[in-house]
Image 1 (spheres, rainbow, N blue to C red):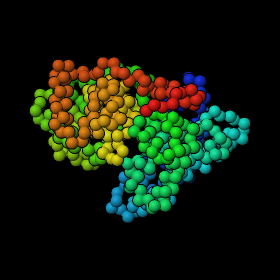
Image 2: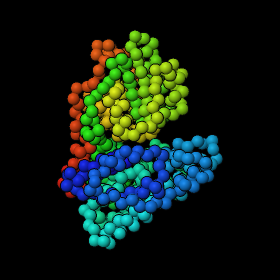
Image 3: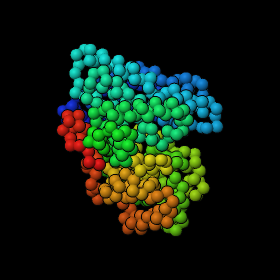
Length: 421
């Protein structure tokens, strides 16, 4: 959501007038809401909020759960017959996902605008949920509008796709939708080079020159306040969701060993956001409970504040198929915070290359215990000399949201050279 929000925030100043079509917040269902971000929509931007038709109300009634699942019923307990049933229904009756019920409402909103004589130079559809791309597909077929398909994640290659228990027929239909979107869109945007590669393999009819890597980024306005790392502790902070699939257990062991070797250095660990029970158990097993703080979900501006008040930042890439192309939006905010970054994930990944390119850190493979420990001890040695480990000015300015929106404007206007990634 932040990617689209930031585009909308900067487009007017760059000469493009956006009209946003989205779901009425009173009608949609979401795992998490951050109302503070609505203030970033420029006052003059027209936002059309529609009704939607989703299965999540029935889901909550039948399961007795108040919170809807992430990713459209994935990641749910496999021991519950009800959960397994809903996962099967989601994978086989709601293709490509359970948000598809919104499409007819969005299409009606566009039809009403065009019937009133409105004219548009382009339409941009951003996903997941990938059902949103079917809106662009239909608009292309009906009206011939120039269409930019913004795919923030893989589609049939996304890491949880195998959990959907799709029948062969459902898999073929899902793959056909994916292929049609990729073939008929005028421009395809991806957030990483590896994701672009995955999509290009889907059809021999695809033209590489229409595929562009437009990564996520950071908003300079979010980082105006000065950095304020603590002077009384070496504080390592992680923001966002983290679960056992991120495999930070060996890094936690290395942190515990580093703490044992350097008892005079007050090492602290802070998680801001959702932390799975298994990761909490790993913290306890490694004897780190007394130096670990768990902060529940906070609004985005508060999350940025936690970045500024850290010494070092921790991120991890989930150990799932096709994770070389996982380049989460928060890595760019980590860069903007100007702190050293410890990344647990595959070497040579897009995230690893980005961190090395900007001089902010590197990725440590999940099993690289010795390298992790050596790096932690190097940070401890630096902290003894100066508790402020903030980095010199980094080469990350091209990842500002405004700079990335400038690239989007060039694509909308058809003036950007073909991708060379």
